[in-house]
Image 1 (cartoon, rainbow, N blue to C red):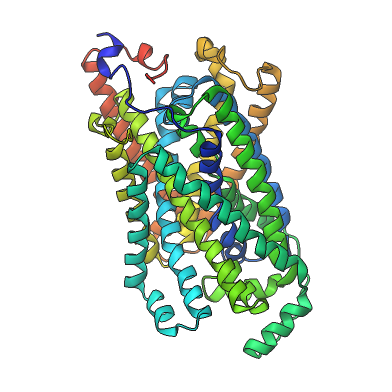
Image 2 (cartoon, rainbow, N blue to C red):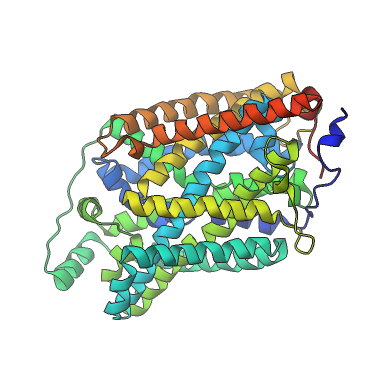
Length: 498
């Protein structure tokens, strides 16, 4: 059977997304809980990291940059929807492509739920700052928090279905507002000192805090870096939009570079500003007993008006995660269905809006499960750990795809337009494989060695179960394709239609 009989000649997607929309997709996927929550809650998740959060953040950027370069190389040659799936399935093997992308899809779907679940506490903090105690108390109630989280999530599902134009009009202004409001934290952090915070804490709560020295531990440092690596996850969403990008050979790598550099710089300034003013031992003490945020801690130093502004900035950053990550997840599902290894109904594209509405809806359902999981687990870091495992595997396979593509698919390798020098490609991808493998081993060892209330609170166990399910789906669907006469080698040697 000719390959063309297994799928349509055109996807129905439209190349409407420009460089700004692509860069915004990556930036909005990266910023959010990653900067307002994770660098501070890490004190609970990795006890003992103490004052070394910023150095761990910097170290975590190394594998992220290598993965970003690998993505840029592959995106320039294979600009299609579902980027990471296409790259690994054409660069290594279809099974590796599905595992890499299913891992990514699962991790991102869960983290969409986690982000949705984290948004209500910011609304709670705004209510507290406005002296609305009843509303603040209500937003702390589990049932109300879940309902609010689900409402926010499904609003952005609707935005994604409405099309690329509505999507860009939503994420670009929110991105600009996010940077402006985030800059308030940076300025306030570097404008105040430990003494200022100690006085504010004494005045507002009658408590005393004395900055302490920390003790460096290599194992703890590496474990924290593996978690903080999650903060750089998100630029990959740019690649998933490859089927809707204008001038993709140029704009996809450029957008990835813009996202990684701008967000990485913002991370360092923001985290450094908060720890410049608030002693790490205070952060660790608070994180051990409750979920904390940067605006919640900085509020003691600022007037109510500025406090509301920085909390709103955090809320905007978190909210802006959702449309970008929903786009990424839905395009992965769409790409699987295009190749015939997922139900064909998922390839349906809305005639009016030119969006894969079925894939978007199913991604919303999976993210809703992430909200419920965060609620019942009682600790959203389980979702973060699952995402870290998933994306370390994904990025590792992207680097491996750069190494294997010329051997497995020289025709596609010849289409590479970014970093064409093969020797340089090998250095970047080989170094990425080594470092990402090390991070993966460290992260898994930390997870399996941690005390837990039940086996299903170990992210590695949950990830393995999901990968077993993915493998079963893959072998069932590929068997079906072979029985129907599809030339599997031909199918996975060329790119899907545009």
